[in-house]
Image (tube, rainbow, N blue to C red; front, side):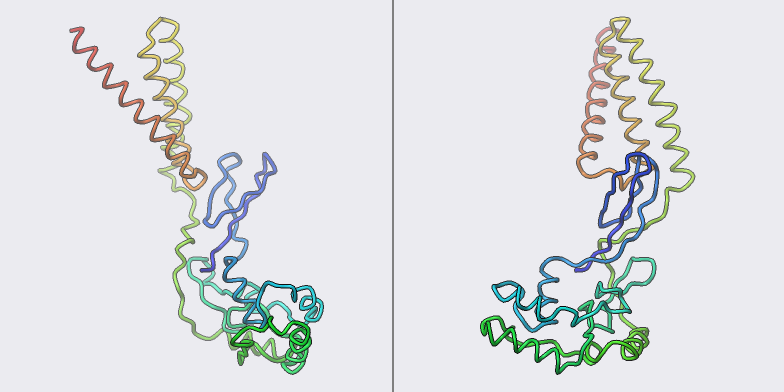
Length: 259
């Protein structure tokens, strides 16, 4: 299944990160931008075989690449991805102009078949069993024909929801306010309190306050930019929270016994 790509270059570190879903960089708080659609390796292999009528791997590839050089151009309707979306990148549909191949012939069908015959004459076993895909919109020469195909592709299509695409909305004001409270108020306050408890020899209280500070900081950051934290960070957040509540339980038992 095709999936959308989101890319962001951090303004602080200069590193570029890509993902299949929108995310916000927690270092510079920049929002990732949509950078196009991609297909899996299996889909690309299938597309090659449909487009050229040749199997995608084998000793014939160097000759095929040389013979077919310049024979195909990127589809104008989909930009070479084979996929068109709804503009919000939450739905995708196969491009009708190129029938999902992402490319259109820059030469006539007769010339394409002639070049294919050259490859098969040298490597008879390189033929795709079902031959080439001959689409009514995917054939013909570039130029006016391509513009007509783009116009044809603007007709009604049936969208298919992409499970990889999620909302690109930024956190709302309430989430940002809570995140600010957790990160800038609660976390530093509990951190300084834990240091004071450690200085006073109250190791249990200090540890509880230290875990509370870490839990508040992680909660606030994840609240402000949830998609910047992968599953590993969720495990860390859960472990810190579990440790905090466990120590709170121990402290409560000690308080009851002491009374």
